[in-house]
Image (tube, rainbow, N blue to C red):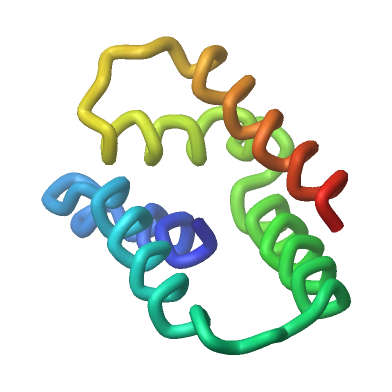
Length: 100
C-alpha cells in the first residue's frame, strides 16, 4: 500500500496507471518472495506500524480515510462504496493485530 500511496502523489502517473493493480501485484510478489522466510512477530508488528504511520504522514488525516480505499476499489474494478471498503480494511487490520 505504501508504494501505491507514494505513486498516487504523482498526478500524471495516477491518472494513467491503475494503482490498485500495482498494489495487488506488489502484494503477490512480496508474498512469493517472503514465502520461505520466518521473519517473526516483531518484524510484522514493526512493518505494520511503519507502513501505517508513513501512509498517514504522506496522506494526512483526511486522505488516509479515502485514498487507500479508492486504490483498492480501483484495483478490484468494483463500484463499491468507499465506506464498505474501509470497513474491510479495518477488519483486516484488526484481525492482523489479533493474530500478532
